[in-house]
Length: 372
Image (cartoon, rainbow, N blue to C red; front, side, top):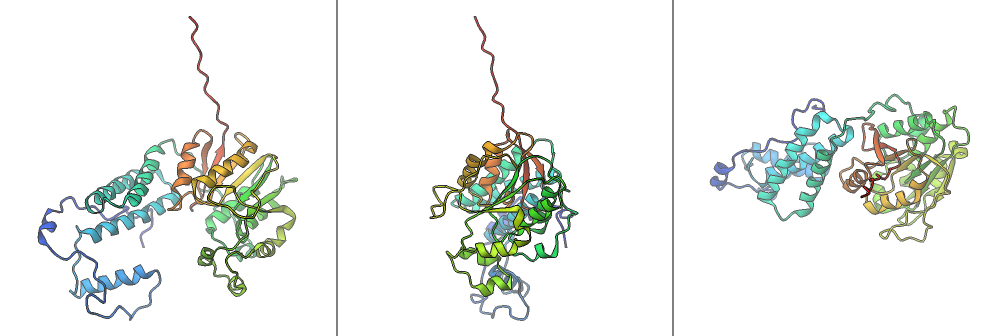
């Protein structure tokens, strides 16, 4: 299996000349098994979405001569776009400078495809344009530490907590708290069941310089239907938690071994899009050593976080982690960090969606006024 280190190109090479194919007038649509008059593939076990079954059936039809695939047609274009999204996902897990040029080239190819086949899909085009802007403007010398936390070991009790966070990120969180030397507390926004909270606490408990440091865990702790997608833990499935129910007691149970290190805040970021009966989160004003942002990937949530907590950031000391930074829907997070480039200096990049920055207070430039 090809890895991101061995794959020579991010996407299927874009054809340079479609003229001959356009003149052939062959079928280019993706025919279904029903339209082809055959039974769906049923002799193999599928893992994945309905797309898996559809594509596999289409391949069978091609091999058996029941269908035709036009490598210059719309089907191929959409496949290249899908592969490009996969390449973007891979890139943002490591952000290796050696991959940037080829990825930009491929994304420009996807944009040319969209211009030719589907100019009406403005949202898709905007997504690829945003990715290209990020790649083209992120031209500073590569300062990222990609090894931070990779050798950390998580306890069995922590690994049993249901999570939406990758193991690489969880190990990084433990390392971050275990090696913390700067003054101030740890703030986590978006704790869910407490896996990341417990990793931070496990690391802090092993830090000989923890002194009176606390972990402040913020979440609404209100169940949403979409959370079920990430739920495989038998105890959660058996609990049959419904939309609108509180799961604070689940969080408290999972993080019980570290209760002495954690202050829990059931509250929400105050944005125009998020209006609930829960109180808006607040901060006491004490110094912050680490802040983990995992509430949401929209601009408004990140702006609200900044308003509340950044006055307590310490220049050249506070570490701000955006857990969703590399996710496909997180374009507004990347844009936010780009706009704060004078204050957020790239620091750590675990092999995951997360990215950490060192906060540096922006200094307003002073222009000398010439006197006549």
